Amino acid sequence: MDILTSKENGILTIEFNRLEKKNAITAAMYQIMVDALKDAETDSAVRAILFLGKPQIFSAGNDLEDFMKNRPTGTDSPVFQFLWQISHASKPMVAAVAGAAVGIGTTLLMHCDLVYAADNARFSMPFTQLGLCPEAASSLILPQIAGYQRAAEKLLLGEAFTAEEAASMGLVNKVLPAEELLAFAQAQAAKLVALPAASIRITKRLMKGAQTAEVEARMAQEIEHFGAMLKAPEAAEAFTAFFERRKPDFSKFC
Image: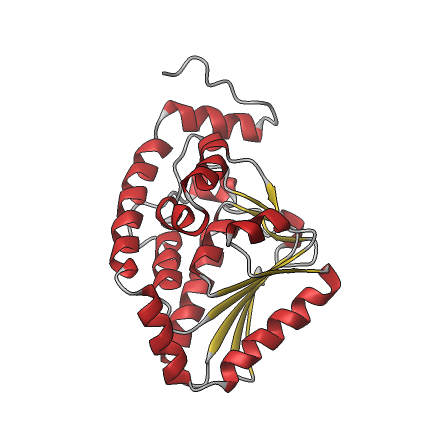
């Protein structure tokens, strides 16, 4: 299975398990996660959710080949359903990130409540490099977390940044040695499980507050632009260059 899910001691663990493809996410993988998150919402035994990758890599983001074959056509598409689920999850979400976290591998973290990174973690949101715009309401949330200038640097240039910089920006709670990451994140999730479930849910809801509506509105804007840009020549050049393993040439586009 490319996504492993398990429930143990009150924690739903969702693990990317496609190491041969750098944990790149397909539509089918999104659907598995959507189903698991929906189930967690109604399962009173689940009191926390933990996202994991592998020690070598968290996720390379969308599987571009699968993405082109299964282009999201509406909000009922698995990828958009996944974004809705993580942005509306009532239960606390924890992430343990090691290695590269690209695209959605980074933006999904903005919806997690606790994010821990190994010292080998590298984050990037290369949407502009693909002729696209941000998703997961990252164009709203990242400036709120990191400030406009730092968010602009990450979203406009799309360049990778370290775990230490992610922590200084407020995207990551703590950076740990790689060999300590998993145990620490599991222990933090276990702390959440031990606390009163209603108190955790209500506290999270109060902190999110009116932002939930803002996130919904921004996601809708991003989806509209994303869909249009996916059909534009800049994206076609970026994707073609990716598959041909060459540098894209955007000089002919205004």
